[in-house]
Amino acid sequence: MINYNPMMKRTAFTVLLTLLFVFTLYAQEQKKDTLYFKLDGEYVNQSLYVPNSYLLEDTIGHHSGIFYFQATDTLFYLKPKKVLCLKEFVRSSKFYNKHNTKKLDDYRLWEYLDRYQVFLIKEDENKTYYLDVYASFVIE
Image 1 (cartoon, one colour):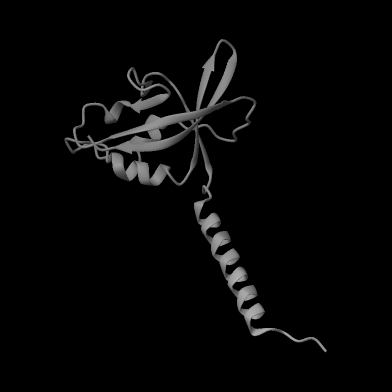
Image 2 (tube, rainbow, N blue to C red; image 1 turned 30 degrees about the vertical axis):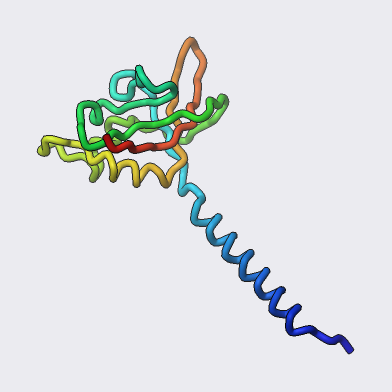
């Protein structure tokens, strides 16, 4: 006959509950999907002041905040199924209103893209670089 100590039951229950909580948090932190955008040098430009930062044409000149991509790594040999045009993606979204003075809602764009794994694709001398970036927003 096995005797179960009530303290041991409580400890086991606490450990299981903690593990369940940790796994739930981990699942919520996972990026939803991966987006690939072409780095064209016209709409997306590398910052002159902050290394490995990329600014959108529509964010330049605003005084409330700036959306940008911060590169963390460079990868090679990825095989994206679909490469999007960032300009078309932004300007056809709910974050862009061509009738407003401030056309792009930088903060809402950041909130949206922060849920995704984002790569900027740069082609240079017959090589393709995949810049692993994350969306950022800074209030000025």
